[in-house]
Amino acid sequence: MKAVLSTWPNTTFPSEARDGIWRASVCHMALSELDVVEGLAIDALFMASANVGVSLSELLHWARISPRTWSRRKVTGTLDVLESDRVARALRLFDRCVDVLGSPDGARVWLHVANPSLDRRTPWQVAGTEIGAERVFNLLGRLGHGVLG
Image (cartoon, rainbow, N blue to C red; front, side, top):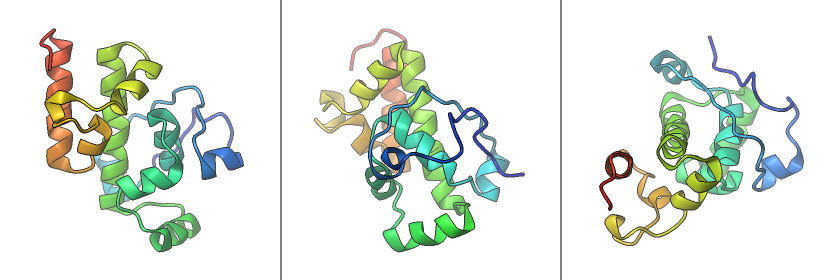
């Protein structure tokens, strides 16, 4: 069973969603390990892009999906397991930021501001790898418990 976006505002994405930042209402997607293993629907990329506040091209670069691969994925409609895992990481990261910081807008800002605890890089930059994401999730855990940086 493929994970699909039942909460997305429409099924045909406007050009702004495909080509740039489209700040729709925050969409949540409950993902299971099986969803990732079977491959997420490409709609998950649009949702992650809108939630995190980055263009689709920036998210594709962050998730290490080349333009040629993206062209193939648009035809199949499904990401492979590694691509799905990276997109799921972006969605989990955003959800955790909203939980800790209290709002989607606050989460978007926090993700894109350089942080001294992350060697003055943004949480979004650091979370591009699994090891980096662990650092960001740990930082969010500390913030959630009232421990600064």
